[in-house]
Length: 396
Ligand code: NAP
Image 1 (cartoon, rainbow, N blue to C red):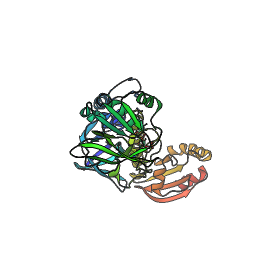
Image 2 (image 1 turned 90 degrees about the vertical axis):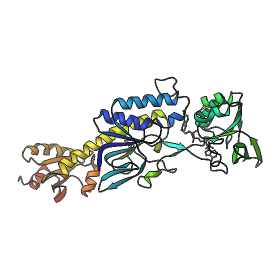
Image 3 (image 1 turned 45 degrees about the horizontal axis):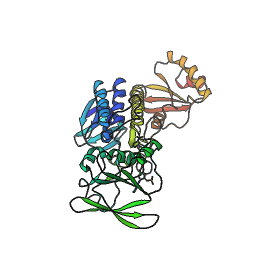
Image 4 (image 1 turned 180 degrees about the vertical axis):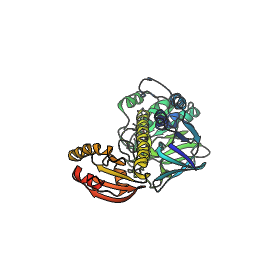
């Protein structure tokens, strides 16, 4: 079976940045991508909050990210990931194009637009219903369109659509926007934009193409019809994480939970970018996540290698396990450093930093002396002094 050090799933800003950091750390990196490289930014017309670049289009930025990643030489492969499997501590990425064993995996699969879930939405997708203003806006030259939602995407894309449409209605279920002030002010000062507050879409209707919306005012309970040729749905995002099933812990909505090292609840599996549970989903935060995930994955791989060589592979070894957050244990560790010259196969390991390894060994208390053969515990003893440790290794 194919074996790789780091497999990155997804080639958006998070995945590409992870591949750059991974390669620069000397890792063998395979990036699995599906569809157009760059991810969601390809769907964005203007990006004004990528530091150092005052203005760029999404596809321009996506292309520069891809070129930058290519420069460091990860392998890119078209493949759709079906699942991740963990068996006896080994991790496997199962794709429609074969299975790969990985030392570490970074899930950077991003998010996709949420659907409204009203009658007509599915039926008219591609026939007036769209989730991408950049892709479809130009089809509505001099026609009236509606944008659904009140977040940044809805407000900014509504403004973008004014280049083509004769009128853009923003239909929002409340009486204030969630989008930031600058975007809202720009939209509200545009003559082509009209906001319909406190209103939800009951139905998207038409014949061959969309002709009108059935609306419901949640304050007055009135129902009305609004003639439009296009409907752009921007009601938030959902994570592309279904392929993981319930293997990692998630927050409500299915966003993957991580710590600040981008570690998921599964050892060696990291998540970065929009797919994870986080405060701000932006290109810049996705790239930051990618960098963190790659460095944490590098540390994880190095640690696994070190532990395998020192703990799980040798025919015979003595291990002193201690906690680096306990001063007396640190003191004992420094005393035992001197013992290493007399006992060749003595290894000192910080069990606090290597908590997964201590768990694997079934050790709950520290400081502890262990005698192991190929990772199997022959003898274990809690020690409180250098004298006790010496006795354990047969020196007194
Ligand atoms: P969002 O901020 O979650 O906003 C979703 C909007 O859709 C909300 O106004 C919400 O209404 C509405 N909504 C949700 N479900 C609905 C339903 N079933 N029917 C009607 N309306 C519904 O999503 P987003 O605008 O896609 O933005 C996602 C993230 O990307 C945010 O963090 C955003 O700030 C960021 N973003 C930033 C920029 C930028 O900085 N330039 C650009 C785009 C996106 P309520 O307000 O009532 O909940």
